[in-house]
Length: 357
Image (tube, rainbow, N blue to C red; front, side):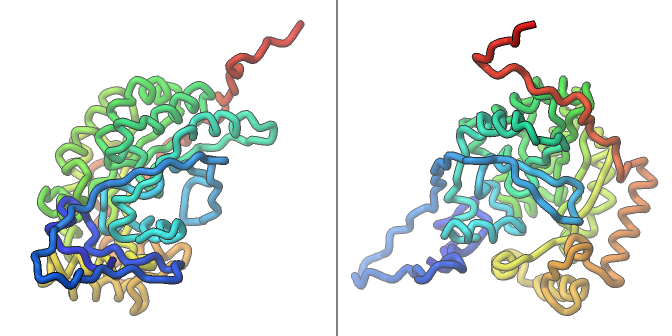
């Protein structure tokens, strides 16, 4: 399909819907030949279902503090233009651009599959991370409640879980999360990229605004649920002046820990990001890209482990120093207490009979 005009993609992040890199043929919109005004069709969200055979995804990255995750959805309607997960949509034969945020795949039945996997005789408990690829609390979760059903299973098994989200919908599940937090079974990370509502709306079009996310931190922490403020991603020349202010706002809302990640542009994300910059911030585009190349040895992205999250060089170290100093001044922690694994206990399966004594 290629470039999509702004009037057809209101409230979306990407400007394009290019064919996925694994497809044999490219799609391209062409005029119909009639000398009549073309009707502008608004890009709509389409959701299809996938019946998962397994839901616990094991990862082996030294950059990550977890070794397993769950994704209730593929694609994310939040539409964050910088999302590093966009290239994963190409594996589905879809565009990492507009398809990633409009052609979503829900995974009903995930909770039942999770129940089965946690009962496996060889299963060894360790914290499960949710929301590190696509956000479990994106808008469609309000109706589907797949994440809520997953949480019910984790609560029943007393299984530790770490959640990352930008969605205020997580407040709906405080009734589950608060008792789990009291047992040391849950920690939440809330991502705040900027305090500028206009920039946020352009960069993260269907995410709750910065003030609303800070309110979510406040409501979670008031209910005893520990929250890490995630300044992610830091965009050089665009959001980097806000680091100290974001951290201060997070502390005032109740966050007790913080972390940061530099903007990452893997595969198709690089071109999508540059198109977005050209449309929204053409006067800053070259400065932003030059800083990114400076941190990645002249490239727009370097996927090496131990490097991809922060970059290297003078600018990257300057950001790291500012972050460390602000955290020290505000009393924020980098490392937090480990989630408890010793409470894990599979409940009796529905319909199972008690053994004879």
